[in-house]
Image 1: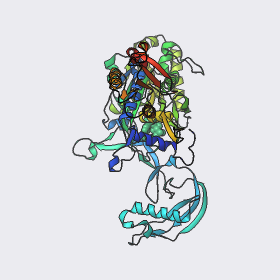
Image 2 (image 1 turned 180 degrees about the vertical axis):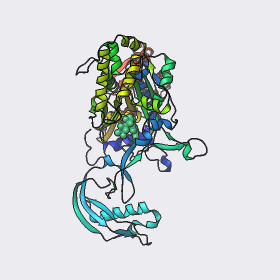
Image 3 (image 1 turned 90 degrees about the horizontal axis):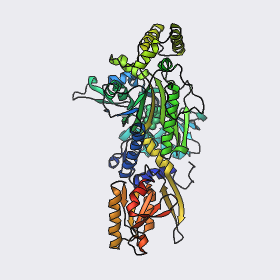
Image 4 (image 1 turned 90 degrees about the vertical axis):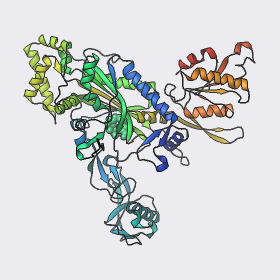
Length: 591
Ligand code: ATP
């Protein structure tokens, strides 16, 4: 998105303001000064989110034969988080500001340049003294006096009442340091020197039960995926499914993000939409089908084939998810970041981030990872319960394998294990695994498309947001806002208006039309103000169609137009004459 003109607020500010003004998104607990990194969805936001959630659920499970749904709890046995690795490693590296103790993610510190000022201390009129020396970067172009004022303010805000008023704080022993360029050692907001990077666990701790001791500690889930792994065997046993199949879930997740930012993009409470798609290990595919399909550019991904291994399934899901984003109007703002082998987690075979162009940069919308059997094997190990499945077709096919063919498969797996830096199986473990495989038993591998609902909502809002200047009749310029949301996800589908408010026949007919439509399509009735204003109000919230009951509807312009209405399209403003009896169908076909 292009940078905004200097005199105008940045585009993101305009989006945040529209969201509040029209009831899409509000700051949580606003009347109490807010609650960092937490957002509430107003009436229109709730509808938008519901439409996105429904679209995802429909395409991921209802329209498929091979994916089932799950609705698991936010609270789980904490052993799950130990098994998944979240207790030990779900941490961001953080650095602390020496002036305010504010933390910032080590990878969010961008180079800054300016002049370094050193203070051996500061003291206030009340005698309070800064306990340690500080180094603060005077940013390029910053005036020395406004810089000093800023530092005093920061000290006062951090030290509380004891520090006194900012102007009473004397900065002691100010020494001008070097001109620093491209340094990475300063807090992005305060400019004060940063401490060493230290890990900071992102899980939100809570207590289950009334005693609130360390033994009662559990966590608000930081992702929905783990419940799917923990319930994998129950779903498999109760649903008569065969691998490959998937389990999907939509639900809240919580992360104690240190620097929640960019509106809802990085929140502390958010909603995820995740699929775990379970597939046969490649060796099982090879035993059954004779070979494993290799991926190459242009490969046919239109529908699953029996000889697909993890690579084809991974590509397939990237393709499916891309089609989904195209269907909600984001097709032309996507980019893909394929993680390099160095970026990948030790168990992952591939991971692609689907990125989207936001006003603040191109950022992750969804990650699609090929995770091998890491998750199920961790839960099998930690719970002591077998999570293997039995595959009759595999057992039968394995009986036809020659000893040479078996040894070749073992050797290939051994070579893969040898190449691993971490978590490699020993030769004995590989042979034991292969023996189980030939008897038809294995832990399925997994492909995981994991999307964030709040990021998706923000992405469609940002993509849809358009403003332009228009002259009104009196030569005055006004700013027109249009949300060009894809009709299928727009919170309100139809605005229904009588042409004039003071004509009872028009009003009663319009209310009749409204009653007819609203059961099937979320609609809004409006009779206040000039018709142009009413169109504008609907454009601003992304309503794709407006229906006006006019004198033609009443039959005053001829019998052939009686019981027809004007339907006006948001994009382009085209107008159509549609019979009331066909209206609901006409609209539904275009959504
Ligand atoms: P990031 O690198 O942006 O922190 P991540 O790689 O940690 O994201 P995942 O753990 O892969 O994210 O989570 C899957 C999806 O959940 C993300 O692609 C994103 O859409 C969403 N998500 C993750 N963290 C947040 C958050 N703090 N706020 C909103 N959505 C989030």
